[in-house]
Image (cartoon, rainbow, N blue to C red):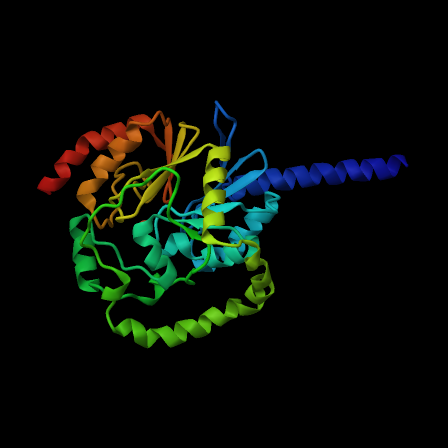
Length: 321
Ligand SMILES: [Fe+2]
């Protein structure tokens, strides 16, 4: 009996050690907000930081990374004992944020929130390269034009997309490209991509039946609103990187900002690509007008309030570059 107990004790210690080690090695950083004790976990930091937000049994995922990282993402969710995902929140529709929406949605049968101005791209399964916000990237994106390269494609989503909330998010008039403006060359690569999509089919088919559980878009809307309220998340409209970029404010303490800012080296928070670069400073100001103490971008490390204030003060110099 004593031997059995000691074996169990050793086993438990090994599991604890492995869990701790995997969190360190895999960079699963986490935060807990002070007021409402909402947990935020960074699931991965390869192509896109994806964040899990949890409170009182409600679990929400912000962004889904590229399609090639889908298995890693699912493994992380399993490691964190996520058996139910209540909704997926997208900061914007770019392939490195939306690559696994369809796969996750089918697995967890959950609604996905996206700003209304980017809904069509989510349904089409592609986006354009945004315009460059700096000299080099401007040059590169001018060459790309409105061609859609293969890597910019992702599995399209059609169901349970929620774009409206009980409070209205603004929709700015804009002259950026829509899905209909795609270069005809897109059509030629389409069949090949459709074939690749069928690789997901066997897994998807088994989950297809579960889709009918959510009766109508109205149900999804009600659910997303309720979920956001219960977890303590507010959505702010922060255009700049794209027309429909939004940020998720958690407990008025942390902001998950997508590509509204990046922080790979602390040298430059401005994303190198932005459809509306002149709107970025105003969006940063909107974020600074909250009480958030830290900002979590999709690329790079945490941005403290002081760092954002410092860079926002310098932002007025962008226009003269
Ligand atoms: Fe982006």
